[in-house]
Image (cartoon, rainbow, N blue to C red; front, side, top):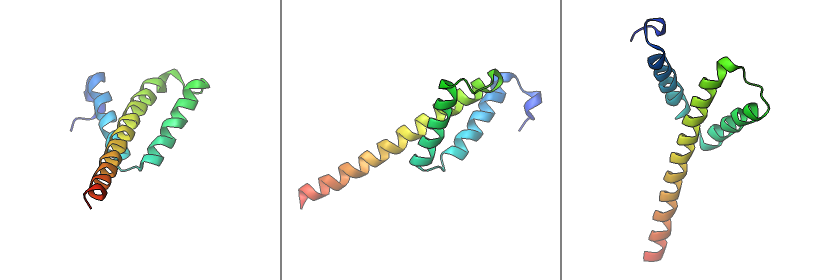
Amino acid sequence: PNAPHDMPHSDVYSVIINRLTMKKEKLTYEEAMQRLETIVESLEQDKLRLEDLGKSLAEAKNLAQICKEKLALAENDIKKILEEDEQE
């Protein structure tokens, strides 16, 4: 792949977000949620530098999506278990 300094900014952000997503997908729901809460607290307390704001928001968006997907998987698993119980 191209080095980040050779790419337009939008492509650099895409690469960064993709790398963050790949790392974050390996997190448990609890770990992703904890990181998301840390980012939200930093935003609420104005602890983020302007330079880090975009990156943190992108990471938060990805973490929220990962949590949503993990919750959906858990919900499906629970539904399957309950359906199996009803059939017995």
